[in-house]
Length: 144
Ligand SMILES: Cc1ncc(COP(=O)(O)O)c(C=O)c1O
Image (cartoon, rainbow, N blue to C red; front, side):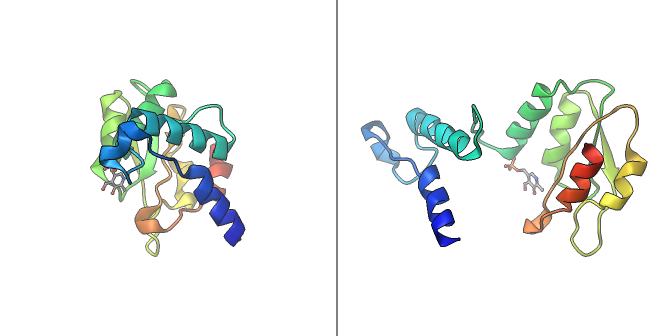
């Protein structure tokens, strides 16, 4: 386990070149470093590409746009969320559909998900509130 963690940490560590010296210590310390980070991240995940974004809200917008989300589409997300998760949906002309949350975790209640699905549903935003993972097994079963 420790070896695995060390390996992951090493896989994601990037060295700053001279051009980044003035801002050493940050993984977002320059174009070259960002590219290195993206490359290592993709390698770690076994993906062809990875893209770094400056904010979660921007990444979410890019993901939804890449999925072709647009007018008339519905996106399910927990009723207890941050407006930054709702704005990308609205910017694309889609409609946020709120699903009630579990009282113990504040995460989306997966037992209520199916009732909120319609022919217009295109995605579920699975938020892990306050660091508590939501029930991804159930969410993935329903999304499949
Ligand atoms: C649940 C949740 N999602 C998304 C965001 C927005 O993240 P970012 O500031 O990286 O866009 C926040 C910000 O507080 C948040 O609480």
